[in-house]
Length: 419
Image: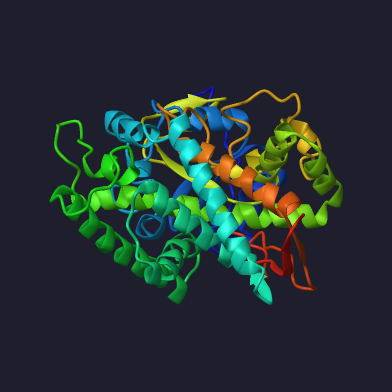
């Protein structure tokens, strides 16, 4: 053990309150203070290793060194992931379940989803033209909820759409808050899971007949490694783990609107450029603005990395926001600059807004391609296809609240189609 380096250590009994107060900046602030991309702290009474950067991401997503079982706090399971969801699995069980998710990410299915998204944007614009003002965040959540359900083959009555949109939204809006709103998130997930279980049962009983290539059909009839159908509760969790993340893209779309407003020169480039620039713009929105703060895993077995000792069972956080703003990999990371993606090669570990590593074998978000396509369509509408005014409002966003959403949720007025 003589070659083991002393890991920078945050003094004190517990720093959970500091994490709550500092939000997205908690790990980044200490990395700056320690002048180190790794340090040890204590959160909720446990020793936790925190790290950032592409090298840290590469080791973090090494499934021989880290596992996801018992990594996510219960509050995250009860609101965001759901019990026994794919994000909590390891090994062959995770690989097999992940294949189920990746099976719906074919070019044909993505094309079908983008067509639905465009139809729902058109329908929404028709409605907005008759409204005095539009709260963009809330309206876009409904666009995405309608689109996700239609694409997934999930039957929803028209008078239930707003309620379902609210439930799916509060699942990710409540994950880091304390008090009544957090319990609203738990209750919303419980209600949604019960509703989805009933639908799964109807599919298996032949009372509902979704398209054979749809999410609902594939997940309802998916079999585990033993050849058994998933428990209806687990199948329900996984269908919701398709719907909820699609609705959560509303956060990114709000930041697209904010970027178009704050950087008018970017709007001009979007007006006059090809799809390549739109793609770069979307990627920079995903890099620049806060979305996921960090992800958690547990050390699978003792190992040493860069001279630091990782003990089996130690909870470890990888800083997503900090890695996307790491000056070792990003020149002037605090500047909004889509052109940084012009010559940039795709990386599995330094650009990780929705997790890093491999899609099929690892824990990178299966829906990342969906996110990008939805954002490109939305950027086209917000920059090119509609005109609108942004009245005086609080467009600032918090680096403490998780998830971060512009405080006014971006109110727009006098929406018109651009001719």
